[in-house]
Length: 259
Image (cartoon, rainbow, N blue to C red; front, side, top):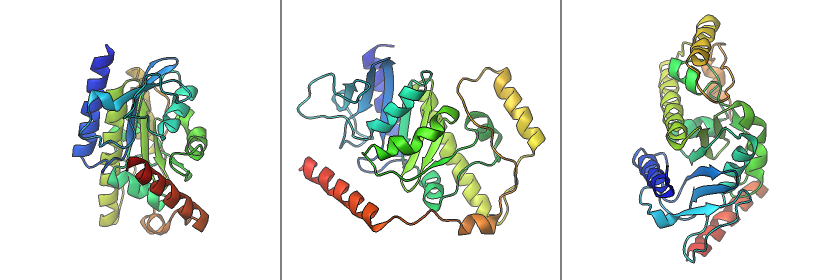
């Protein structure tokens, strides 16, 4: 695929994320690996629903721009994309967004690690939560590092979600599946019961995944029942005052840079 075609695909995926409410304002970022040391990524400070080709920039594996642009710079959150590419040579694209239901589970500190929907079992497996890391810093790559090799969808505590895959559509569809699954589990929790697939059924689904040669590396989800009361009471640790001040400072800096 030519670079202009990949840029068009990034623009289309950004539009879908925005239309579905998975991102707001300038949230989220998308990247595609072109080669061992060349990455295409969305620029900082742009709405993913209204991108143009000039808003997609080329960087190396250190995040350094490979093309000069006075107007568009790579997102500072490309650091977590690069961490995934360093650990997984099979991964060619990464999507970061804030889908409301999946992000709600991340904020509540509840991982999506139970076997509930067959499609999620096969394509996502167990979805862990990475501990909170200050956005745009090296903390985020550090926090996702333990999960990358055995996951292709990660919840980011108090932040959002990451999905990654063999190509951009593959990574994006995992984001759709993640949010769809989170939404259904949330609805079932409101009804007071979530039926979890048995260990036997889960094993059969994982065998189907192997039989059809699905690429990627995921961890098998769990078949233990979800205790609704315990799940609803489980909350992520409160952010410290220092972390809150760091977030404020980062936001103010971004606003200042845009003016």
